[in-house]
Image 1 (tube, chains in turn purple, blue):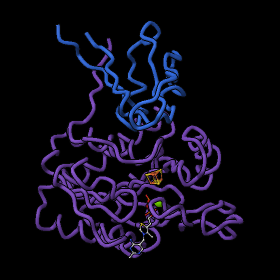
Image 2 (image 1 turned 180 degrees about the horizontal axis):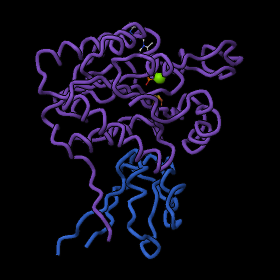
Image 3 (image 1 turned 90 degrees about the horizontal axis):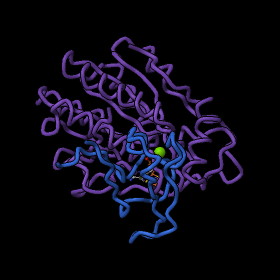
Image 4 (image 1 turned 60 degrees about the horizontal axis):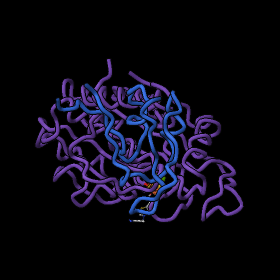
Length: 239
Length: 69
Ligand SMILES: Cc1ncc(C[n+]2csc(CCOP(=O)(O)OP(=O)(O)O)c2C)c(N)n1
Ligand code: SF4
Ligand SMILES: [Mg+2]
């Protein structure tokens, strides 16, 4: 029996580049919020980067706040303390969470803030034109590593995973229907852990940035499957 | 009854749908939308209404909706 697949009603238009992984994450999150009844009971705490594309009236109604670069986990923690009935989730990039915001990223996990952190890892600073990020692969060409990155990327997962206050930590991608369905399960798990048990979750999404990678969307996904996931393995690391 | 509804004006031609459709029912249409992207067309005779295109599309081009009688 065929089943209905209906676009989430909160997405008015998609403002990301062709093939961008941000778009797929945004849709999955809206599906989960709609299905679990949190559409009017959630706050999206946005970092600085292409995640800010959800500003204006295109997605999420009024339930969002843009923070200082890298600070969504601490801003979100404040919101959650005054409104524990609301699902609070951060929507950040790898530059936001692991460069300027690394301190807050680790603090939130270490303290077990009762929020859910989502990081779109596209191995560069997408919004500002594809500069090197802490997650840029060894040898990867970016606008600031024109001969290929000489040093090595940071993988936060082993540290996050080792922290007792972390209830759930997982890494997904969006390069196939199966991976996209897994990511949706991770989002659902993070919502449940926060709303039923007041627990912290961390989900990283390895995500294509075809514009700055100078690859077609399909080739970007291939590069993720063949190279990026060797450095950033997928799966559930905690919980 | 479920029917495929497409929004070609939203398409940005990433081709994830063409890559993943298990029946190879989706191909570039040869036509351009107002955004300047070549949108996809679905061969309804091949389509089995599995929803894979909805799942992988970043731009909400495909919906499978209960058709009004
Ligand atoms: C305090 C401050 N420093 C630097 C910038 C410039 N800036 C804007 S977005 C960005 C990085 C975004 O990269 P990432 O977080 O990976 O997000 P993406 O766009 O790749 O999704 C930077 C450095 C800024 N806006 N504010
Ligand atoms: S620059 Fe990269 S991350 Fe930003 S919208 Fe475009 S593809 Fe997505
Ligand atoms: Mg980035």
